[in-house]
Amino acid sequence: MRKDYEFVLVERDGALVTLTLNRPDKLNALNATLIGELTDAFASLSAEASPPRALVLTGAGEKAFAAGADIAAMANLGAPAARAFAAAGHRLGEAIEAAPFAVLAAVNGFALGGGCELALACDLVYASEKAKFGQPEVNLGVIPGFGGTQRLPRAVGPQKAREMVLTGATIDAAEAKRVGLVCEVYPPAELLAKVRETAAVIAQKGPLAITAAKRVMRAGADVPLPTANELEAQAFAALFGSDDQREGMSAFLAKRPAHFHGR
Ligand code: COA
Image (cartoon, rainbow, N blue to C red; front, side, top):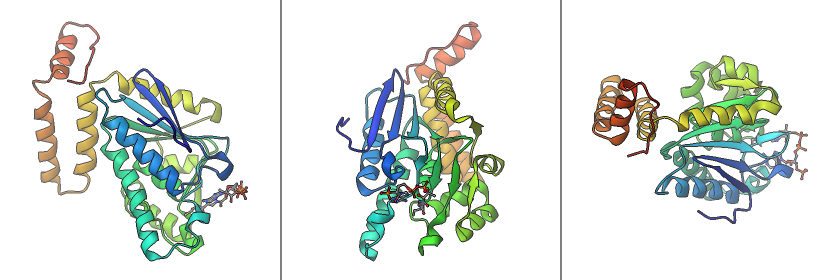
């Protein structure tokens, strides 16, 4: 993968990768370059022969995960350029969802607008006690454009999502947990270590199973239940005969830990 990103830091620790949005002077606001770099990072990590087994996404600095799409960059856009900007945000969300590994957001501060939408595209969202979530776009005379109007209701239900999108109000980490936007809340100093612990747990599991579980849970959410169950059955069956399935089940029967290779 590219090593010359301007706004994204990449750290590898064995099978775990951490991507850090690195534009702290602008609270990691998402401009086209940052969005493109993140999309490129997810696409190239996904295409590796041995992709990471889990990835942690976080923001540089003390204050923000990402305080939204870059308002200065959007201020003078016309409709065609705004459409292209939204499409770039959607491609990023889709690259995260399509990644074969679990993506864990470690939301260390503001996750507003595009920052909230970025967290929503991740598989798991963890937050520091000082994190704040919101879709404040109506304050700017626009609406969420990176999937927020669609993923937020799926995450927290239509009432809470409409309240957040229509009022632009931010919610704190405790409320984000209460409404199901966040899995767990940690003290700021512990957030990254705790999220990496969970990432390490996931990294020990069968990689093919993680990819399949992630794929069918996403795909099944948008189709009728019988179709969703069929997706599950196909993915379940496809894992049988894999090295991972044989290893997982024989390790259990032999009362030893399993060692998976993603084959
Ligand atoms: N786009 C562009 N720049 C942004 C930004 C965004 N979404 N969010 C913050 N910044 C910039 C500020 O302009 C400022 O830059 P400057 O130092 O060159 O003036 C810098 O980041 C620090 O932000 P500041 O507003 O001074 O920090 P704060 O602690 O006083 O306030 C927020 C923090 C998050 C409440 C405030 O920055 C904010 O409301 N941001 C916009 C949130 C938003 O509407 N997001 C949705 C966008 S669609």
